Amino acid sequence: MQQEDLQVRLKVEEMMHYGYGALRHFPKAEKHVLSAEIRHCMIRILRLVIICNRRYYKKNTMQDLDAELDLLRSLVRFAMEREFLDFRKYEVWSRHTDEVGRYIGRWMQWMRQSSKANKASK
Image (cartoon, rainbow, N blue to C red; front, side):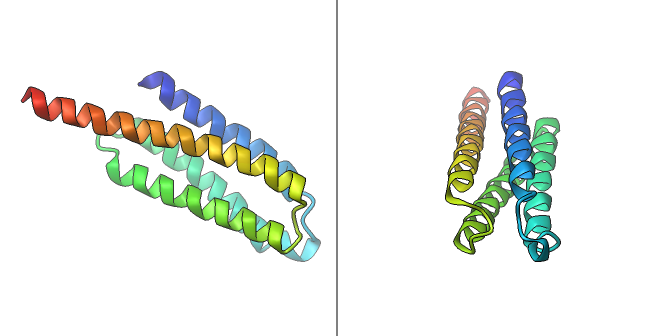
């Protein structure tokens, strides 16, 4: 599963690169509020991916990771609705977050299956 862990991390980093570029175009008044919260959210997602990769028991951290990704999606959608982010950038960013979400979902599914396999072998 080490390869999947690496893929998730790379996808989060790609999303962050795109997001940081898009945040540069926010209005000056929002750069220190909404933009900062979105940046912190992306950093927390990366941090949680790294922590999940290192922990033996990942369930709670994975749930936190999933919730943080959901928060990021909401913040980016809010920025688009407030017209701080144009629709094209929102669309691309959403594809990045969806891809990260799919990787996280597969990671969670793999953990459930390996947990069941471990219980069955005992």
